[in-house]
Length: 241
Image 1 (cartoon, rainbow, N blue to C red):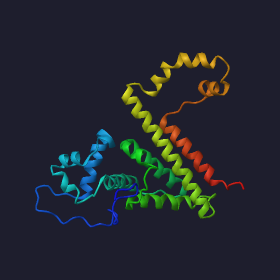
Image 2 (tube, rainbow, N blue to C red):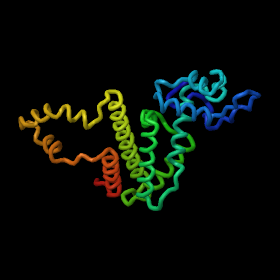
Image 3 (cartoon, rainbow, N blue to C red):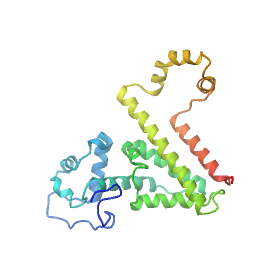
Image 4 (tube, helix red, strand yellow):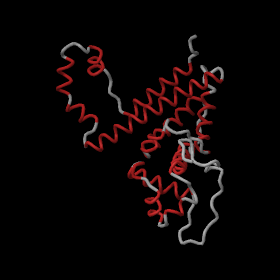
């Protein structure tokens, strides 16, 4: 049974690896996931298939089904391998520094593996490394001054995760659009400059005009960090009732 939450009564994390075969190419779930990640990095999730992974590994496609029963499990392994990258660095001291470090590493991972952003918020991430990152994040947020009980913690995590998902999907989408059109954001804005100037000169959009003319236009990294710190500033305040 294939569902968005997995595909086997026994999760892939709890099933033992198949017994080694007397075959020219040794396999493991780690090796399969690493190969799948390389293919997805190069071609996206749409270009990923068991047949392509098997060809890259030099084995028959059916051998892979000894390790993963379907695509859902393969994605689970790939996602958790990325969470391992996020979790591998040491944690700084202090709740805020810890959250900042985890979220920035999550952004780094999403930019290195753009397909990862496609799966944020769309699937439950329950592998051991994903749970480790979730534990570190939740434990740090639980120490924030504005988090007084479990309800506050749930709301704080919800706000933080919503920001991460939205910000990373938007940034990855902009990168893909720039590649597919051959036009980066600044060039696209310049091409629409005359039109936008004419529209703003009508006086019908005074607030938009202030944002365009007077507003700062920081880099994607600066914008991400600023918005993240705004979220954390909000979490530290006691909510109004």
